[in-house]
Amino acid sequence: MAAILSPPGVPGLRAPDFLLPDAVSGETISLADVRGTEGTLVMFLSAACPHVTAIVDRLVRDAHELESLGVRAVAIMPNDVAASPDDAPERMAAFAARHRFPFPYLHDESQAVARAYGAVCTPDLFGFDRGLRLVYRGRLEAPDAGRELFAAMAAAVHGREAPAAQHPGLGCPIAWRGGA
Image (cartoon, rainbow, N blue to C red; front, side, top):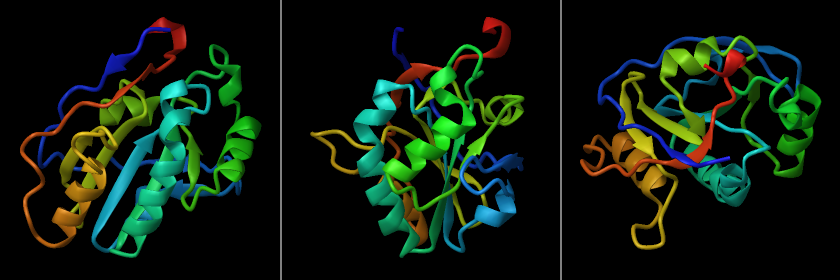
């Protein structure tokens, strides 16, 4: 499967609400349930994507560190499980346990949430400030640029502007129902 780049984010875009089941706990989780006092990170992830598996442990590290700054995180699996059986809820739960997710891992079965956010790939990372306005959409990090997501979210926490230059994330295309 060919990798694609996430498009640029629209700064200030408000985070769409959601209500989705957590593959680990079985609870239904909303945006309000995971909203951090200083910011919220919404991540579209797939255990079947090698781009996700390559960064997942560093993503978990950053989520832990961001939580100490008041930024909470949530992961959402957007793929059609008929097209991506490795993303079935029981496999999501095993992936979350194996990598010790400190955040819920939600199943977007209808794919309505992924569409509302404009997600196109996994990973697709969206960072929102305390007012749920988009401040970052891009990659986790790069060898030459350091921890870009972490730096952008820490800047938002401290009332500074997110970096103007935001580099797209690289990931696996979302497996849409009907191929659309």
